[in-house]
Amino acid sequence: MLSFLVTACLLVGACLAAGIVWDPFRADAGPVGSAAGPRDPEPVAPADDTASGGPAPGTAPAPGASGGNPAKGKPGGNGGGSGSTAGQGGNGGGDASTARPAGALPFDMPSTATLRSSRKLVFAHYFTPYPLSLDNASADRDYYTRNYLNPDGENGKHGAYGGLLRDRPLPVPPKDGNWELANLQQEVRTARAAGLDGFTLDLLSLSGKNWERSNLLMEAAHSVDPGFRIMLMPDMTSLKTDDPAVLADTLARIGQAPAAHRLPDGRLVISPFKAEAKSVAWWTQVLDLLKSRHGIRTAFVPLFLDFGAHSGAFAPISHGFSEWGSRSYTGQESSTRDVKRAHAMGKIWMQPVSVQDARPNQGIYDEAGNTATLRATWTRAIEDGADWVQLTTWNDYSEGSQFAPSMHNGHTYLDLSSYYVTRFKTGKWPKIVRDTLYLTSRTQFAAADPTGDQSLVMSLRRGSAAPRDTVEVLSFLTAPATVRSTVGSAVTGHEAPAGLHAKLLPLRPGTSAATVVRGGKNGVEVELPYRVDRTVEVQDLQYYAATSGRGS
Image (cartoon, rainbow, N blue to C red; front, top):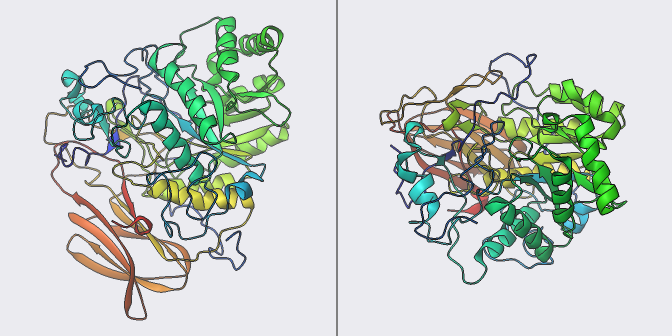
């Protein structure tokens, strides 16, 4: 078993808190199979440069305990920038936990002002049940450690699938005063430093803890940076109302917050998750009530689980469209068709970008192929001409889909995304000015059968790429070099060109590391210290990640 008390946080992944199996793939999704991976920028190093709340400590109730979200496996329901290349600071200041250290990225991040001058926008899907801390306790004994990472947590209710979560947010120390607000402010700073324009806020309930945290996030965003936007995303698989007036009144209340995302013409953006759960007539009533009762003009950007089946009917009331998307690097070509369809109807398109997905509670996972899914989905957003991007997700640890800095991924996936964010928003691939290595692998083999008490194990989702057991060395180099890699007891070397290059190595028991060697001298190095074992007590099919840019 991957010990849940190795600093209380050496467990990864995310299992589903509640819900039934959801398959986002349409019937015409591509077949299961392996792929060569996404097409990365050519050339990768161009000559032109772009720019120099939960339970109180000790209490038992879990946050968001009632209500479920079968579509995304949400446990919600009632009760429930950097202005410099270092990436810190801005209007709301910064702290050591959110400021990017100098040299963290292989390129110099453009200023927030430069990125925001683009009409293209990048959001990340914010999931209120998993903030940085649930109880303001130390990481060795907080709610995540005691109840979510522990297979015996919450009185053993998650024992059948090995515990609720496998990964968690990077721990933060307990704080005095309004610690929940302070932690949300920290998340806003982290997102801004990565080049994000805002969050899409998954509105899981109309009251209770998730609702309170939603309003607190609006306050946090505005206090840190008035330019950071929060797009309202009522979750139609979780909200418990069939009354258009109730939803309209609720959206009007939270939409009054200065941080609420509005178009330049003042229209409030409403982007419901699984919009097709309600009819076009129902949504028309919501939008009409927002205007007649509250004086709020809206821009409706529905997110569908089945875009093809519903976009035509929704077109007359919509400003744009989005979909939740798939979580494997194969089958991404369908997004090209969807973007073209949206643009042909005169609508904007918000493209989903993902990193991985593993849901122990539902017994299902997607093969992400190390960073192949992240690179493939970003490539599609860039090449297909998406107007907005939604990272799916910022912090849904119950799906294992988090981009936010986490215990087992560090800042790797967010740092990688900043490279693509820069290209998406500026139109130019940023110049690589420092060698940087990213290392990813699982800590167990895909076919490993857990030896513990876990009775529900994950199987591959239909439409996914085939399972693979690989270590990926992703290099960003200023000039060609040898990359020496150690995977378990095997030491190998490969020649990597300047720019971005991915090298796959067979997964082996033990730990992994990689070093850049140029001119006979060792350069930057990265270590993934999480040990790979053939025998495991708990199934964990998320990829772990590390970057040389952050040091040890």
